[in-house]
Structure formats: C-alpha cells, structure tokens
Length: 48
Image (tube, rainbow, N blue to C red; front, side, top):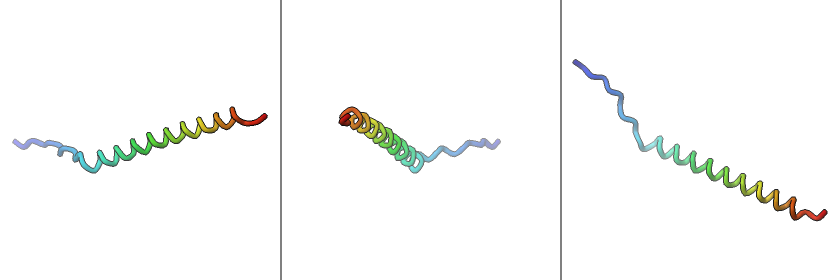
C-alpha cells in the first residue's frame, strides 16, 4: 500500500521574503507616523 504525503514546506526562501515584507511594512508605518507627527508640529508652530 502506498502512502501519499505532501512534501514538507521549505523554510528558507519563503520565510526570508515574508520577513523582508514585514520589516518593510513596519518601516513604512513608522515613516507615516513620523510624517504625521511632523505635520502636526508644523501646524501647531505655524505663525498666525
């Protein structure tokens, strides 16, 4: 009797891509938050 098993997923290439995407998203969120904080600071300090 033959057993059919799915091949085990390769941990190398896919995990490094997922890690790079996650790091990219985190950096994008941090950059966005920094931009928003800078805009708020600019508006608060704007001479009226």
